Length: 521
Image (cartoon, rainbow, N blue to C red; front, side):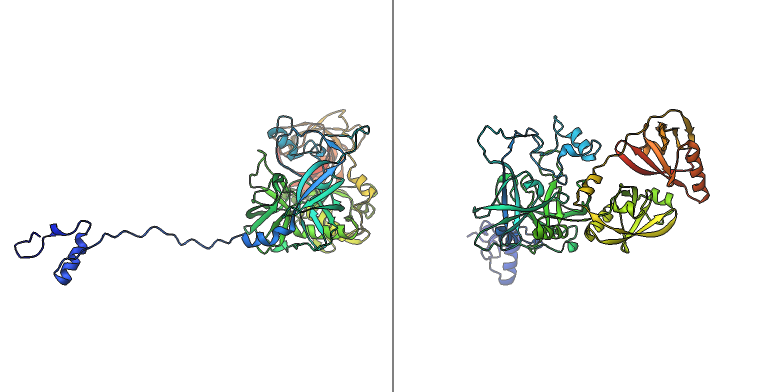
């Protein structure tokens, strides 16, 4: 080995791969060089937060979740809608919605070229030819879940509504016949019963009042007929109104839900059902992370009624209502925009018999404050038929109350009243301007109200939706039959210190209220 002048090994003799710093450290401590090996930095690691696994929940609840197959003796024609997903409208078909319904307008503009509703599989159905053999044909496939060990299964009404034979398929592939116990189109719920000499794994409903936006949820179901499929997400929103019925109060989740998931459960991490998947919103036809589930609290009450006698009965007040906006509240002298505004009591309804009038604002039921129109519908329904209820009203700037004997929403009388239509508007015969409001009116031929003959497109009346051909029947709950009557009502409101007046407007689609500024012009 080559040595330096002072007798020590040269640095050039250090083995290949040693480091100068390491060699220097050894030499400083011993004076004798030693073999030094190359070292590497530690790989990057991140201390990630502990994320819960859904495996335990899924393994526990999966035996309780089933696929529901429905057959009918009616033969469906091919569905060319091409959307590939389902959307329920409270038991009604897509074509049954009003032409001006926002969902119908949306799908007409952005849906398929035929303008059909999303996944409306039953809109065209051929009748069975009596000369041909009688066959049961599959018409629907959905999901469901056991809620008792003796075989009661919850699913959606729109899954079973057209069926005459039902089969549930368990997660182990076992197929069992089921019978329909009852269904409720207003909440889109149905109850099946499997009769078998065995005990079934079942799940229970959660207290969904404790469910918060942001909570983890797991959806289990039968999307596209694939069989048991699990998806996960969070609660995106609560209290959603999608226009499917008067009791809309959906939980919105972003777990992947597709066609075939209808009727399937959404679980919390304790394995309790927080909602029943019933609808999705998807302009493209696939999952976009917006699904709606019926809350467990709603389902629990409805299913209990169906289990008892196969039907659901609700209290019926019989008044057409709309929300109270801030403008309407100001026009009526209400301190807050709460309650339900009565557009019109239906003929011979319990509300009409008790003296409830158009223009009344229902503020409480049995002392329980009413937040909005949906809240009123839910509270009245929950009381039940043939029960007395104290209805608190705001009328002509004063609070008062009436006692109503509620009817039965399931009765033919109620259904007939619900489906009643307003008469067509009369045509104008002469004209007179109300320039301050940006409208032109004329007395109606029947003497009931005034007909709108022109609306300034830059006025607030136009912005609120007032249209030519509609009829103004009252202002601040005072009947009007001329422009002078309107002016008189506006002056009275102005003297009361109000800045807006409440106009009742009738059209072919019904009656509604709007608040217009008194001093516009």
